[in-house]
Length: 278
Figure 1 (cartoon, rainbow, N blue to C red):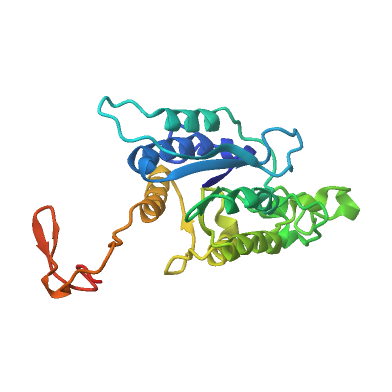
Figure 2 (figure 1 turned 30 degrees about the vertical axis):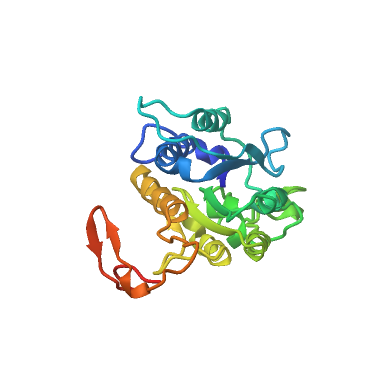
């Protein structure tokens, strides 16, 4: 289940592509789902909302989880994938980043899905939009991203800027809590940071940790710098979710010592680390 950020910043051009960040995400998803769509049910939500003109309204579902069609021999995409990409293509980048509110809004939908459910969060910025939040300049997205009047001016200070300025504070703890709630429901969350998300690397790493998908190494989330990186990230996530190498037998064989496993006609050795095992 893809949760895709579509704020105004996603309208910036994607390095390595002639398309915007948002358009590139849709294009890469199409390529991915052509390969694995028939193995999974896939759906998507976009945020902020596509219905309410309020830029900070929680996102909503744009495509319900649906089993993709089988690969075709004529090169044409199946109707499910065509509809999925069409729904995403109807949206334009706009608004803020109500990540926590969006994850909470779609949580009941995710929990109601049968089987194992995985969220892929694609974003190029920090969560914000909590107008009740208060923060210093070091946690104000406007300051962090360079929209400052002076070195000591806090663009999120409601006493100076006015009501609503707190909505530009980084909504970190609330978003981590929303991801943790999904994890508690057995729903893992992968985090893909698009170009522009670099100032918020620590927070995206916290989200990956909370989502139970932290990667080994110094960067726990999938950090993307260009289109090729995005392709690698989404294919790594998609294939790990959709393609499994476990086979459940109806009953154990009479003599396990007489069982062999073949792959493409070749005998695969019994080896727990590099072969097969019970």
